[in-house]
Structures are given as structure tokens and as C-alpha cells.
Amino acid sequence: MAHTNDTIADMLTRIRNATMARHESVAIPATRMTRNIARVLYEEGFVSEWKEEGEGIRAQLILRLKYKGKGRKPIINGLKRVSRPGLRVYRSHKELPRVLGGIGIAIISTSSGIMTDREARKNGIGGEVLCFVY
Image (tube, rainbow, N blue to C red; front, side, top):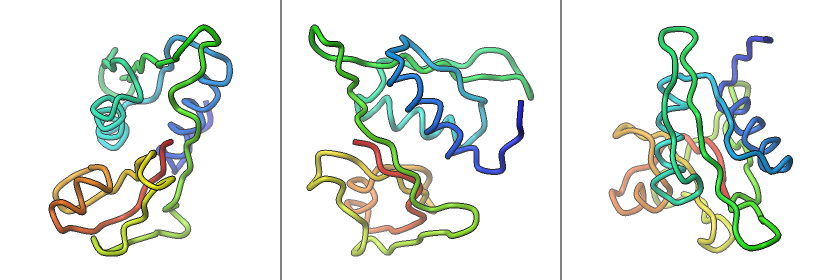
């Protein structure tokens, strides 16, 4: 497997591909960052559950994807990486982006951990805008 420096972009791509293929679940290499993002996706209702399998370097997160209706439309319509290793994007709490007028979420890496733009605004903290989920 190709090693990517951008575990977040890799995670988003895996989720995107899995939802397009209507997979039940998707496996993602477990890192502290991917665990935190999985937790936010779960808390925000984008995935129905997540668990960790294996240990050490082989550990993987299994995210159970959510679909709605007969046509099994994915709950996650889009994932967009914002800050990248080559171009970091930081915002103060006043400048945090709103995703689709609040329908989506921005996942922010703050000094108090990984959280949604809404939580960061509420706590009055800014940080690195990791990605948008809608």
C-alpha cells in the first residue's frame, strides 16, 4: 500500500469511494487524527458506528456508512479536504467557514482537540480547517 503523508485526504478518499460504491463499511488506517475525525463523523450522524480492529501499525478503523431511503442515498454527499500538508489553512473562531449554510460541517483541529466548526465557534477557538463534510 502506498504510504501517504496526508492521512486525512486518504481517509476522505476512502470514505468517498466507499459511499459511491454503496459499501456498508470502510476500513481506514488508524491514527490519532483519523480516530478523532471518525468520532466527529459519528457524533454528527454521518456514520452509524465506528470501531477499531487490529493493533499497532496494522490497526484499522471500521466506519459503518449511513444511507437513507429506498435508493440508499449516502448521508455523506461530499468530503472536501481544506488544509493540506502543502498549504495549511488556519482560521480564527470568527472566520470559521460555514458549510452549505450550516447543513454541512467543517472539521477543525483546535488546541482543544478535533471538533466541528460549530463547537469551535461556541468555544471561541479557531484552528486548522481540516475538511468539510456535507
